[in-house]
View (cartoon, rainbow, N blue to C red):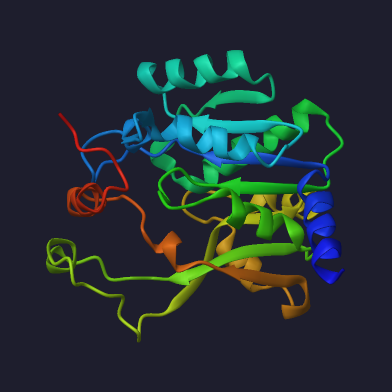
Length: 240
């Protein structure tokens, strides 16, 4: 019986009034190519992440992108299929992730939808799945963050298939995360440059924060070495 109750609770939380903001305006300077357009199972990564966000049944999905025609075209095609998708172009992506989030909050305010919480996602955690997002949304805390290792991504690690995470590496609480909409609006004015949510979240009392652990989220794509490793493992398609 308890299993059924838990399943019902998860289902209720999953369909609660939430919005999603996807931060996808990075310039991928270290990678040397737009990570939004990397392919996973024949689909652009931005396509994959948008469809993943759709599975959580949000009121709206606001995706922040750079001024890039191919990325905009991919989002436009999906928005034609899913009316909840709204695209916002960040004209100054070099200013940092915080500005992208600021624009996302502004677009959410303009949407004037009854939203209790906001799911915030990045674009390059390639092993992110629906079950993790469901777990984040199942908690009623003011902030529910993802917890995973912060790994040192050395060239050797990505060339050695026997590499393992450093057990002494610190753990971080980061994206994706779910945050109370009212709290997010209060913090909007503090979002400048690279000053994102992390320092604001750390200032909250522990009673208002919870985490969902998933070390697969340590795998993100910022460098050519990381991309090569992900392709070697079959997590991303190899480029022709």
